[in-house]
Each structure stands twice: as structure tokens, then as C-alpha cells.
Amino acid sequence: MAIDKTSLELEKTVPDAEDFLPLLGTDYVELYVGNAKQAAHYYQAAWGFQPVAYAGLETGLKDRVSYVLQQDKIRLVLTSPLQSGGDINRHIDAHGDGVKVVALWVDDAAKSHEETVKRGAKSYMEPEKFTDEHGEAVISGIHTYGETVHLFVERKNYKGAFLPGYKEWNPSYKPAPLGLKYIDHMVGNVGWNEMNKWCEFYAKVMGFAQLISFDDSDISTDYTALMSKVMSNGNGRIKFPINEPAEGRKKSQIEEYIDFYNGAGVQHIALATDNIIETVGELKARGVEFLYVPETYYDTVLDRVGEIDEDLEPLKELGILIDRDDEGYLLQLFTKPVLDRPTMFFEIIQRKGAQSFGKGNFKALFEAIEREQEMRGTL
Ligand SMILES: [Fe+2]
Image 1 (spheres, helix red, strand yellow):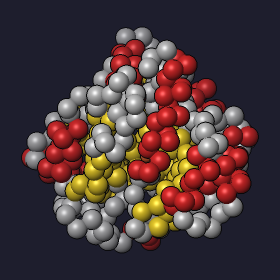
Image 2 (cartoon, rainbow, N blue to C red):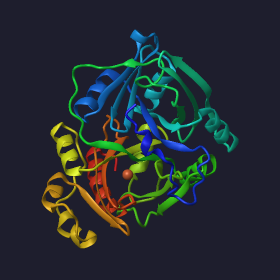
Image 3 (cartoon, rainbow, N blue to C red):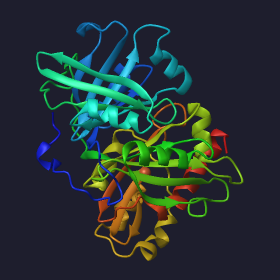
Image 4 (cartoon, rainbow, N blue to C red):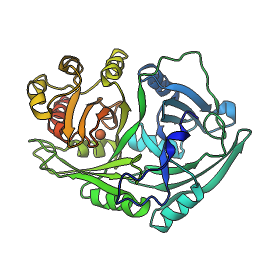
């Protein structure tokens, strides 16, 4: 495993959170997709994810295939059904391609299941031990918003490529990584008036605390609106902002997501880099499409955020957004949806001290999103 255990001394950075599990980090994110082989190629070629492991017919599976890819600490699993009529097929039929599993890395999967179910979580998977010649892993799981689930992965006694049942996947095709390092945060979209319910879920069931909140006066334009609260675990490694739609003059982008995803689900995954200009430049060169940011954004941005280390010109050329809070500033940019349905997208983020989420950019961002919605005729 490339995940570095030495950096894992648990430090409590969010005082109100209660780390009773505790969560060591995000273990992996699994998407159910229509064609995992081609999706894997996309994440390799365009995003620089490296091939890690594979499971399918060749490893004894009959009903599904999974490709595991990794870039630094970010691990993606892409899974497709091999037969008709199963749960994965039904998931894809309902939601299109999308995130099914947000797996969390724990020391004790049985205890994580017991503690969260005791606090009100609905069980998805009782603790189960999986073994192969590389050791054993214990996995359990609970339901969260929509049809999304959290798996608790205990892998301290496992030395293989990914998890028992997977074989190493080592093709000769390996485009270079792009400097993506870890998942900064993962955002869930939930239905009308459901934000508080799901924030309470993360507080009560997982011991998370609220970092920050916005209301629709912060995040609204003439047309679209949303409300958002950010929940974090105690060591700050897991941050889950939760969005709900708010009334605007026209359809909220959250409502558009809910309509096309048929319910609540993961809206975006923010990936951290230490050099956003290089990372985004290369992503664009490899064909990843980002939201358009109006040039006029850059006319006034430095008045708003003050001095920054970077030259403004390359930021403007790439459409990178800038925001500042009390602790520093951040650079960020959002892709267009990476699936055919206008549902999930990625954010690329570089933090230079700031611990917030780019509130000052929301208006600029939503104006950009609305231009996209307008083109799809869903505004
Ligand atoms: Fe974000």
C-alpha cells in the first residue's frame, strides 16, 4: 500500500468532534460504472491514476469486474456488472455512473460497525473477514445518504495489492501521474430540507463536528441557490460538505443533480495538489474539461484576495479560482461533470494556509455553472 503509515499519528484538529472510531483516512472510493474497462483507461490516460489491482472472471468472480487505480493516497475502484439484473445493474440504471462506496480506513472494522449502528446507522454489511495468501482484511459497512454507503476497511494484517480476492494489475500502459495527492473533501448532495438531517447523522453516528456553514444568501445568484454545511471528523482527514437545494429564480444546480441522479449522492470529489498550475495544465492537455471562468473574474480578484505567490497570468489562462480566509488562501478549479449525466465532477484544490472551501468563489462558480445549465436547457 502506498499509504504512508508514519504520517498517521492521530491529531485532533477539530475540537468538537468525537473520534470514537477513529477514522484514519479515506481508504478508497468505488464507482459503479457501465464499462469499468473503459473508465479505467480514462482515469489512467486523462488523470494519471496508476494501475494497482484487478478482480473479475480471471480471479474467480462471475458477476462483476473491478479495476483499482491509485495516485499517491487517492484510490479509485471502478466496478461493472458482468451479468444482467443484479444490484450493480439496478444502481447504474437508477443513477448512471456514480459513487457507490466511500470506504473509510479504520483499525477495527467490527468495532466501527458496532459503534455506528449503536448510534443509529443502518447496517449495510456485517463485519466480514476476507483472506488470501497476502493476509486478511475485515470489512463492514453502513448506509448514508441516497444509495451511497460507507465501508469500514481494516487492513493492518493485509499486505497484498489491494484487498483479498484482487490480483496485482500491472499493464505496460502507465501514463505519468499528475501530482494529485489526497482527497481534500467529498461533497454529498441531498434533497430539499435534508441537509440538517444528514449533518446530524454524521455528528451523531460518526462523531463528526460542523466546521462551517453557508446559507443561501452566501451561495446564490439570481438563478440558482444552495445551502451547505461542512462536517469533519476529529483529525480533519475526512471532510464531508453536505449541500441541499435552495429556492432561486430558476432550478438549483443541486436540484438538477438530484433529478439526474434520482436522489442524493456524491456531487464532487476534491483532489489536492501542491502545484495546481502544473496539475491543471496537464489535465487540460489530456482532455479533461473544466468549468469556464469569465476573464472579468481576474480583473478584481486580487482586490478581493490580496497578494499571492503565483503569477496571475497562468491562473487566468487556466481559469483557476482564488479565495482567501483568515488562515491563508487557496486555489481551486472545478471540472465539468465527468459522466454523461450532469451529476458528478471533480475539484482540484491547492491550499496555501486556507482551511475553508472557496466561499468567495461560489458566486463566480455558480455563474459559470449556470452558463452550462443553460446550454443543457435545464436552468
Ligand atoms: Fe469542494
